[in-house]
Image 1 (tube, chains in turn purple, green, red, blue):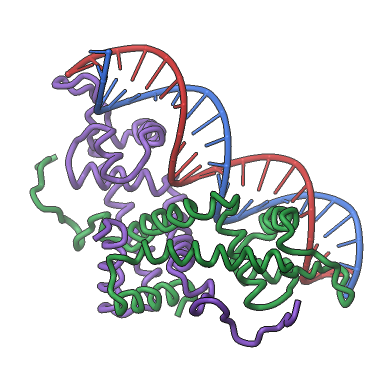
Image 2 (cartoon, rainbow over the protein chains, first blue to last red; image 1 turned 30 degrees about the vertical axis):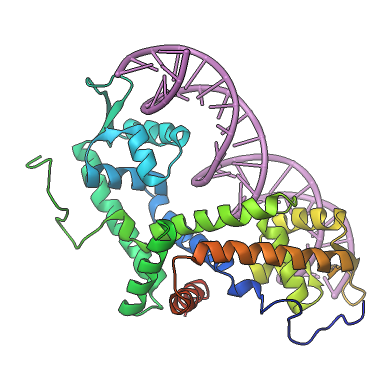
Length: 153
Length: 153
DNA sequence: CATATATCAGGTGCACTGAAATGA
DNA sequence: CTCATTTCAGTGAACCTGATATAT
C-alpha cells in the first residue's frame, strides 16, 4: 500500500508492458486481420475456413479430409462442418476413395474453382489493407518471421 | 476444365498461396501464441483477458471499466464478466466514482498486484518460447511491425 | 432532451474433446 | 486387435449486438 502511483514501471524483472509482449500484439493484430477478411468474405456467405480449405485443395490437389485438416491445422470435427457447407454450395465433391474406403477424396468443382478465384481477390485486398503501414521490405520480414513462429524453426 | 493438374500455381494474378498471406499467417501465429499463454495461465484459473486487465490497471492506474475496455479493445459486456471474476478472486475492487457516479473505479488490490507479478512471469515465458526461432533483431522488427498493424500507422 | 456507464441476455465463429461407426 | 478416418454431440473462450437502468 506504500505507493499507488509508481511513476514509470518496473520492480522485479525488466520492463513488462502488456503492449510489448508478442503474445498480446499477435492476438490484437490477428483480430484486426480476421475482421478485415471476414468483412469481405461474409457478403459471399463464406468464412475463413471455407476459403482455406478451397485454397488448399487447389494448391495440393484432391486429398482426404484428415490430410487437409492436418495441413491446415483444422480439427477433424470442424472439417466435417466446413465441407458440408462447401458441398452444399457445389464448390467441392466428397467421393469415397476406392483405394481406402475410409477416406473421402475431396475435389474442387469448376464452380469451386471460380469461387476461389473471387475469394482470392478478397483476401488479397484484406492483406493489402492490413499491411498498408508497412514497406515492401518490412512485409517480407514480417511474413518470414510469422512463418518461423508458426512452423517453429 | 483444360488442365486439372496445373504444375506450379498461377493464372490470373500473382502468386496466391494461402501460406503467403498475412491474414493467414497472423491467424495461425496467434493461435499458437494463445495456446502457449493459455497453457500457462489456465493452471491458475486465469485467462488472457484477466491478465490484460490487471496489467492495464497497474500500468495506467485506477480507471472506469469503459476506459479500460477502450484501451484494451475489450467489449464492455465481456469486461463485466472479467471484473466479476477478478473481484471474486480479490484481485481488484470496484468502487463507485464520487465524481461521476455512473463509473466504477477499478483498482488493484495488494493480492492483485502479487498475482500480476506471477502472471507476468508466465506470459514472459510464453513469449520466450514463441519467439525462440527469432534473433533479438528479428524480434524487435516483428514487434514494431505488429504494433503498426494494430495501431494503423 | 441526448449522451455515457454498467449490466444482462443472447448469437456466432472458432478451438477443442469424447465417443461412435466403419474400414485398413 | 490396433489404428486411421469420418461423423456427431457438446464445451469453453472470444467477439459482437441489442436492450435496459442509471447518471451526466
